[in-house]
Length: 314
Image (cartoon, rainbow, N blue to C red; front, side):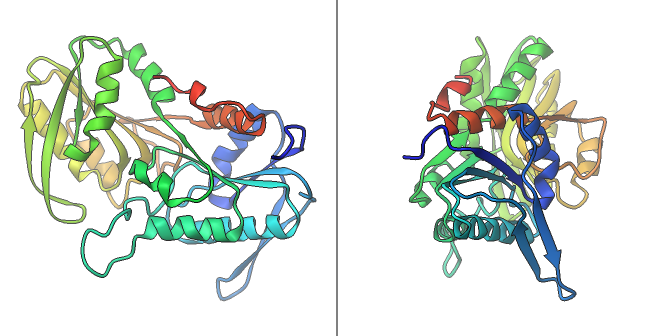
């Protein structure tokens, strides 16, 4: 077991530096220095520009597209291992490829398992991430996984809204457990389900509302918002059902294509997201909450061998 007195060094990938700088500031130390050199053909080389020998190293990088972000993460782990780092924890606020967690048709890759294998093979000792698309992905790893929950930032925000007749909703049956955790935390709150049917990825063919939303202030709960089509359609069905208002909380704001425009034109009062992925542009309808302080505390607890579970709101 690595001593809690080993020096902590925090590094960042290029596309997650906006978040890593906040995390390092809350932690109370500057980010370590990395140099990324690019060749004309697009190939790149990563250099850790300071000693990490014997250090407890944290590397912060979300693995949203392009796949360069994942490759950079793997290259750092390999470089740190070869530089004799004492312990390597990869901090992946948004774990990309998490939606490919099972073999739902013949001849497809279980890519989230592949990524887990790559991280382990590269030399990572621990993974810290937030709101995996499927909890069972933790089992894909043969190394410890600290699975952080965004409830620590979303629940206090909801409390400040002071909404009456509050009801939580899930845009699909698979998210029922996630939405129920919110409805159980806030007293006298209901739960409704939007049951959807897809013909193909990112395209909802049919959706049915299960439950009563008449006169309710409804909050949709999901982990990822990609195109936003499902969320916008669920919000419309809820408002058509007589709801007073409908908001949505989503941890990871992928927001592909014209998703932001779709949100702005929708009946949603507000979309609340975290900053695990940088927002492509600002919008009056989108509120971004920072996870930096939560990750900073988690890094400190991991280094000091303290429970991370104590940081979450139950």
